[in-house]
Length: 445
Image 1 (tube, rainbow, N blue to C red):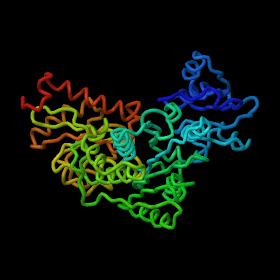
Image 2: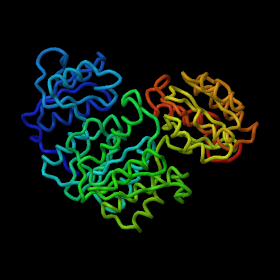
Image 3: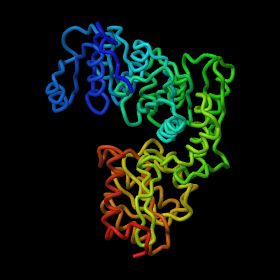
Image 4: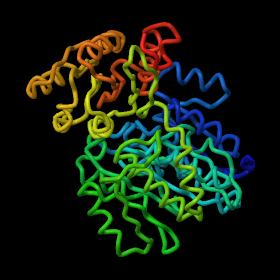
């Protein structure tokens, strides 16, 4: 892997707002590429940390606003539900608001590399498909770097040679802030209600997702899942080109790979292999790579078996549609759910309720979930915390003969955790604490 030349962004000046997981790495990369950067965060400790690294930290509401672009952390709005004051100032000044994925594309081209870009979006399945595609490309010997909404921030990725491929997970927040980025192959997996506060309604959300295909040419490939009506309609709209369209579906299919159970993963595999094929990977290599894919942490990951009960960590299921994909994989479960619910709660999951022999509910919206479950006759208890839910779930699973305890919260985690990763890690540690280390081997205690 190569590093970017130090002159890529010479004579450029960027404002960066939000100095968390995304903002500070972007600042470091832009500075290393020759840019002047001015940083701000509404949180004082974040500002102090940036200043300690030697960055210029200044209130972006004061002084001039002579910047080439404003880079906003993805969670900071520039339109709905209300623009941050700095974003409003940028818009008024005609300063573009960009994601770091856009800046990565600009940097790669400015550095002289013809490396291709592959983008993955959709409401659910983005991370698995992104990681799987990167795995396939790596197994095929292609220089690859993966990141974006998954893992490494886009602009922190290394410079790839001409035959390299950047595989980027693109959230709707990132897609509404691209300007020149063109994906040689891009996938839109599925659409269900999510982030409607940021996009107004499903039409606005779908429009932002469709931006992943912007600027594609006849040399490029668009991959679209057609297992929901909105995505199928998008595929129809794209069928006139100029890009080549590949429709994919997971209905009635299984992957045959242990780390990728269920129809939803069949769709993810179909997307990743269609994209890999568009990038020149042969079918035999793809088949072997899918079978060797280890899966993602926090996505239907078996974290242990204790007293004959398997504990599955699906903490990444932060909305009901994602939880549905896990619930559909098991016939009889004790379900741990709850947190900060999205619009509609878990009402859409009623077809899976007969599989739930008991539910342990946690987090802010546990009472709302309890009302929904009570209305459908599902036994449940408000545990409040994950610490209380795990041992109680084991007790219920043993008493009711359920072979699986599934953490698939159908909720965001921010009411009790710093993110879904922290929630999943806590679940795994609680499972490990249920008994002696030997009990985690699957042997009945």
